[in-house]
Length: 58
Image (cartoon, helix red, strand yellow):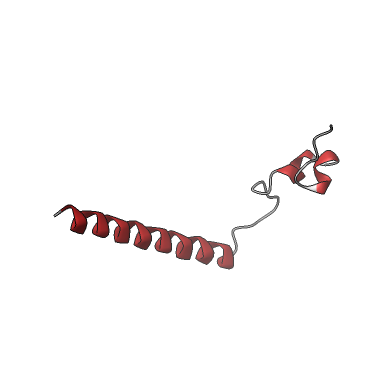
């Protein structure tokens, strides 16, 4: 039984199998703000989890 690639073009272009590999200038303003907002949400979720963990320990 042959293994089917996740992405259809992976058999033709090995780079197509790695969606995190990009070409060209991707450091646009929208990309940077997306990363900033994603990081802020991650920090807030971490702080909330830390607060809940500390409040239940008492």
